[in-house]
Amino acid sequence: SQTIHQWPATLVQPVGSPLSLECTVEGTSNPNLYWYRQAAGRGLQLLFYSVGIGQISSEVPQNLSASRPQDRQFILSSKKLLLSDSGFYLCAWRTSGHGEAFFGQGTRLTVV
Amino acid sequence: KQEVTQIPAALSVPEGENLVLNCSFTDSAIYNLQWFRQDPGKGLTSLLLIQSSQREQTSGRLNASLDKSSGRSTLYIAASQPGDSATYLCAGGGYNNNDMRFGAGTRLTVKP
Image (cartoon, rainbow over the protein chains, first blue to last red):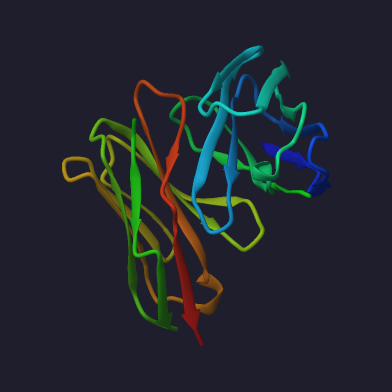
C-alpha cells in the first residue's frame, strides 16, 4: 500500500534561518506531488506541484522554493525565513493529475 | 483558475441529525471533486472522490454528489455522531491543470 511521510512534525525557526521540509512517498511510481500551506483558520494555499523529477510549478511568488531530486521525494526550502512563513505545511500526492489525493500529517512551522 | 467556496463556515448540530455541507466551484469543466476531513492539527483524510463522469459517491454514512452544470457539490452525512466533528474541505481541479483548488472548509461540531 502507498504511504506518505512528512517531517518534521513541528519546527520552530528564527527569522532569517534556512528551511528544509521533506516529503517522501512509498508504494507508487511517478506520483504528482504537491506542497500546500494552511494559515490558521484558513484554507489550503497551493505553493508548488510537480509532475516529474526536476519539474516544478510555482503558484505563489515568495521566498520559498521546491525541488524534486528523486521520483518520490519532494523538498520545500527557504534560504531565509520570514515571520509570514509561519503556518501548517502539507505535502500531498496522487497517481495522476486527476486521481485521488492523499496527504501527509503536516509540519507546523513557527518562525520567531 | 478554479475558485472553490464552502458554506457555511461553521455548523453545530445535535447528535443524530442528518446534515448537508455545500461546496461551490466556478469552472464547470471540473474534472473531479474530492471531499476531505481534517482533525485539529492533523493532515487531511480523503473521504470521497467523484469523477466528472459520476454524479455521486457513497461511503458508509457519507454521500457526496456532483452537479457540474450548477457548479455545486454536496456532502451528506447521515445520523451524525460526535466523532464526525472536524473540518470538512472540498477540492476540485480542471482537466488541463494538475493542481487541486480547495475551499476554506466547514467546521462541523456534533454535540452529544
